[in-house]
Length: 518
Ligand code: FBP
Image (cartoon, rainbow, N blue to C red; front, side, top):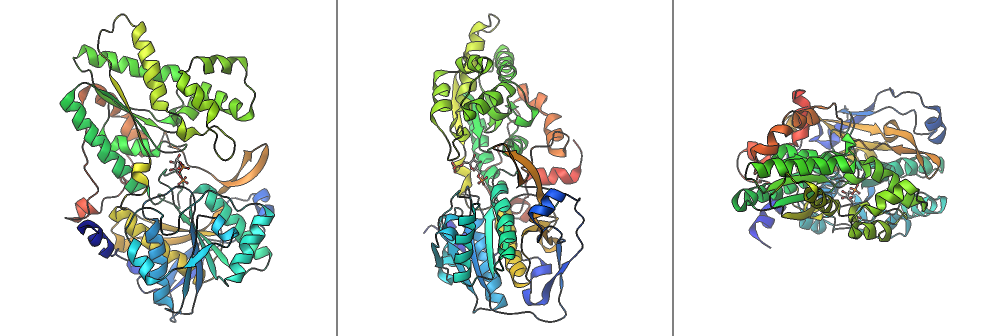
């Protein structure tokens, strides 16, 4: 074990004063204020009308043995292990006789009753470590009546007071369904959601940001910063850097704010493929006229799905019927991309978007475009990159390490005090940790109805980049300047030692939201 690993294992997150002494805190439910939705009400009759919970000082000391289960769901996000460490610490404090059981391999662990009881030694090995390797993860959904019954049987067999779901929008939608089903069937297990995803698209007024976003973006920004420095030194390559983020472009935007690339596309602007290619070719040409044959271009993973003509093509490929206009789009694509579009399918039978090399697609199209331009005489040497998995299991930043520990504590408190169908929420995340505030938000409150496979389904909505929001406006006000100026920033690695101004920084987008100005 290297010295940094040892140091990180011994790091202890600061605990905000409101939840420092768990036996002296209790929940206070305030009446619900969400808009009436009769369909949601009919789907969630038992959890629909509950209000959100605040944490308040308790007049009496509350203790009691608890039995909790927990699992990871979906893609890795730095800080996940700290959620479990936070739950563990809270249980030790509430009653050291409590039990914590980890389900293996994601939600399927609950359905198939694959679990193991966690001990202090397990927690000591993963505290402040990235990854989800303590339990593993998976993308199975617990949604069929058979799966729900199997999950309930496991929870009843283990006599669980609570089940904590560490997941994104889909997993938390699932958590809401489970909570309702358990209540309806008289199962005592409470279901609590934790907002996880590096994509940053599980956010709302109540959920300021999902955990993992900060550490992943800081890792990508470090890499982009290094590439910027290399580009300025070598002056010979165009770096096309695709960044993870299944749909929304929050990661690309956050990294652009931190690193100032020459171009960064934001999917939510919904530009077509040819416009994007024109913009890149214009940039390459303009820079070439200034003697600059290098540059940095950021491309969000979800960009392709926002391009109107590609969206139609992808939908048609998913349905298996291609119109003549989509056929023409398909034929205009490089052969490699055509193969990826037709060969790779995700577990739901859809085109596997994360496997489509949008960076290669853009490089090939820009090459074609530049060849056509007689005004361009430069040398275009592109290099493709894809940063995704590099950032999902890094050491969590202090922000994520602390945020996750607190989320774990909130989950344990929620179960102790009998809440179910809620997600843990920490507010005022830009304030000093001491002053953070907490809520449990009913999951149904975050849901709306969306068409899935021709049917209206209740789901938690993915939050896209708000083109009127402070972060996008800040970026939009500066991006023109970055095209030619080479204002590359090199933020360096996540810092764990030094002053709080180095170690305790928050995501740029949270900071900008507070400033509320371009
Ligand atoms: P979650 O939404 O489950 O947190 O996962 C996000 C993500 O990392 C996306 O950014 C990416 O598109 C996807 O997972 C990749 O999935 P996989 O791990 O299956 O390759």
